[in-house]
Length: 561
Image (cartoon, rainbow, N blue to C red; front, top):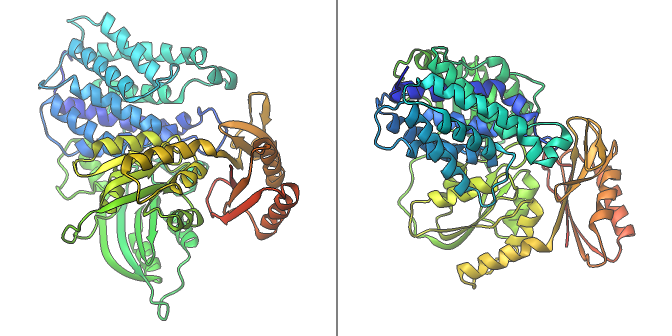
């Protein structure tokens, strides 16, 4: 095939996303740290899914229109650093196609060069040995070797050939990869996308493998995280008002989520006081609704047959205009615009106790997420809009969420809204920074004060290892608890309290005055009292601020100031 048009590119992009979906657990497994937040593959998958949804029903013949729409979908759905970088690669790729209705192999190569340029500009401090290296070296190789008489499939063969070679070299560029014995996970994910695109151009459109979506051994899936997978059955969404208690059963969110997860997947449950929003893919929507109605009454319902939509996508037929495209139910009609407040703060948080902590210190909007659940740029845009303030401060509270938050800030269209992203990389940094907010200071002063506060706190966490590993001389065994300080593994033990003690010993020095301890959902009352007693006796000259955070994944979050 010497040239491709918009519909051919559409099939290539969707096929590339499907191929990544089929392999994202393998990409996740390449993450360096043996902790349950290795979600590069998941983040890239969700990002690509968002782009695919944007173009799946479009009939444009122009490659630029398809590429532009796909890029928009990626930008809105970008999650994690890997997802944001992926979105920027395809953003540049689409810019390289501007004004073109169809392209040949040379123009295809030029577009990838533009993708590299845009992606590198988006990263403040590009790191070699990552997805950036793989896309740069493979695109350059294609650009240097493509000929005017080459077909598109020949061009993508060249791209993939060098991408594999570049991926093999990543451990030589990034020492931590070599130490752990893996290649870069983001680069591996990109190759799966390229290979899926090649399959489509060769007439072998890649379908999604449903076994990937139902693998109960995958910790992310088992936790019920949003997966957005293409699924046979029914997409069931509803908004429900809980109670009244006199006629309805008491609502336990954890049990409710577990029951729904056992009857479907792609589950999202969001509770806001007495309102519960649910999205689930299931073969038995009636059972889901009957169970849910024990706890409240429905305000809004939406059920769609995804088997039919899957058939339409596979055959290239147009789906109905109202086909499912959203992860959660559409919001109710908005009231008349209200006058903006002067300030608002938005924090990313996971765990009811941590959310309440943030609200108590003045945070007005909570974006649910964190480790294993990175929110998208769209999630931040929705929070910014709901905050309805002239000046908005965002606390990502995770290094893997910072880029999505920053990208969202750049996408705000309301010129009367100033968005400041405080580069907090941990929950404790976010707490320390948000406390510094002063309603009487001007926006820039607040921004600088909150950024300065980040350096005042040392952050640590206790979690569990998902595989055997050795990093910086510390041997880690699968299922052991590990203590981490500023991305460095400090200790390993089968006892979470012992790990916490070793971590505190490393974090506390003569200048320390305050210990903030946030307790996770897996810690029982006896363990809490043991920890409290140990800290008060061992570090009697330091103040202890202990909170029940109820966060998943991390047994303890520690801040020392």
